[in-house]
Length: 218
Image 1: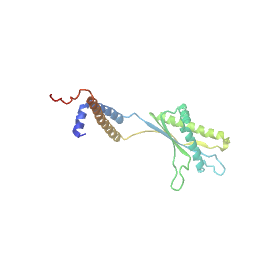
Image 2 (image 1 turned 90 degrees about the vertical axis):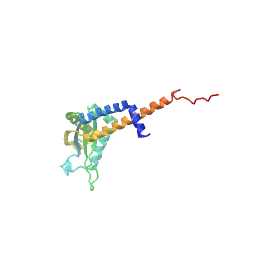
Image 3 (image 1 turned 135 degrees about the vertical axis):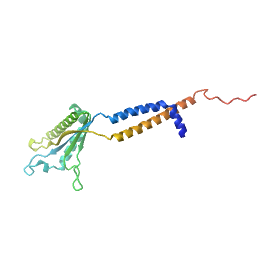
Image 4 (image 1 turned 45 degrees about the vertical axis):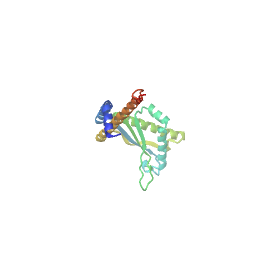
């Protein structure tokens, strides 16, 4: 298809291009003036019990504690865990991310810390969701030890290392507008060309549209 044919098709299906431009303008308005979004976050760490040899719990963080924390994360990411979080009042998008505290000299996930994130339309809702997730996480840690009949004085505990807080999510408007414009332009051109080809092909199959050869005189 030559550039002239493309231009003719776009002129014939100008209403498709116009509709794509209107939709692109509406999407661009949402990019320029987006709805406010906030991300709440907190860091939880599993602490071992206090012993005579290690009175400071933070100096006795062992890799097995990180495995326990990851096991609880898997429980919460399962369908039953998602249902439990929903029943606890957690709405929207949330993430449970084990923090990578390893270096080139120490193994990864040595410290059993977990970063909890939640997205909401307001800062209070984001912080509330994080606190509810922390509550469910702590209950799972306690339930796991209760099932093993671990004495109260020998249990590991979930402690909030970084208090829940919320921050507004800010995107790059220029990149958003550029992407929206490219998508709208491509959708308008491709939609107009497809519709024009479809209509022209349908017209070409109508009986009697093209006259047949003229029979020769006897």
